[in-house]
Length: 189
Image 1 (cartoon, rainbow, N blue to C red):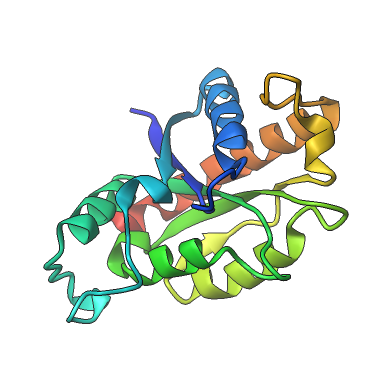
Image 2 (cartoon, rainbow, N blue to C red):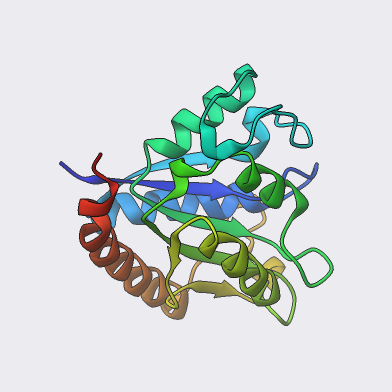
């Protein structure tokens, strides 16, 4: 059975391009063959600013949006966060969504597909790594970074990859798979 790869779209802002990159990565991961990818768009869950009365570590969720988010994240064996950069930091929607849960994230590896201007969203990735490690997520160093992302969008709005990006994706997915296999015994139970 293949491991499930949750491709998490971090931005919820109208006009965002994260879903474009998520669709490309979904197709690339399917062709790669080691994962069953699932696009997990934070926007689709309608998460307000954290509104659960009990601490996430208890897993006693009252709100339907939290229960659905919990199930989506619990099902994943690995993650790729498709992330832009907001003021040199992670997207607020991602920080909020991560904070909703606790145990669902534990002992799973994470990679990043970041995009932006000159920095390619890498400053956001650095801030996200600090947050994710507190939830026992293993952020791997291999990643996909797309600088000047608008230059990679076709007239129809879809993403045009290149050899460097494809190589980065292949390397990241191979490493995510290795880490997912290695951490699997810790996820059981």
